[in-house]
Length: 264
Ligand code: KIV
Ligand code: NA
Image 1 (tube, helix red, strand yellow):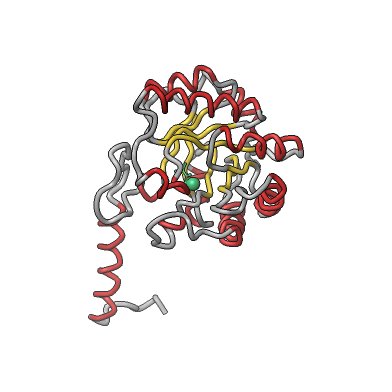
Image 2 (cartoon, rainbow, N blue to C red):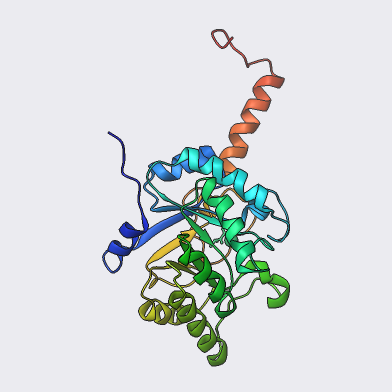
């Protein structure tokens, strides 16, 4: 039987009933696994600049790259909602530029486009929403602003910035945003924003009170060598497992133990 594709209507209906789970995906192989694992949405995040491409930040990611990865992920998913990031400089210039860029992502298979920024992006969110393109906002730690923020640090710790983030969320939702990512902020602030929001919030490093939780898949699978951020829970020691399997293959080849009889 064909599985039914999740839509934003399903997301709205789940609010207050079940916390939803989102995983990043950059390729067909892992998109299929996460989809079959029951992920409620897959996010083609511009974190792929770091996680997939090994860059120091997300600033070098292009729209063309996001389109390519979105196509690959779209082919691998059956059920999950598909959200894709608008990369740096593909939407900040004008609502018209954002519309053209968002259109490319939708044509590649995305159902929702995500963009970073608060009140300053409200006009763009309204422009896209009025033209039938669902938008996910993203506030708190916004990695495309890493140099302005002075690094990857928690946001909204003092009263002034907390109030600003609440106002950002309010304006994005008023402009028509259908989802809101809340990244790296105190749990009580994320709880407050979630309570004030009429659309589902998706938290990352923002405590347990959001409507959904998102993590980078490579973090969940423990595929990175070295330390993960404190909010990550590793469900697999993937790096060690993969490296060990690969080392055994290399060793078998060196020892002429692969291929064996019946392996061609
Ligand atoms: O690019 C990304 O993976 C993201 C999530 C971590 C929210 O934006
Ligand atoms: Na992102």
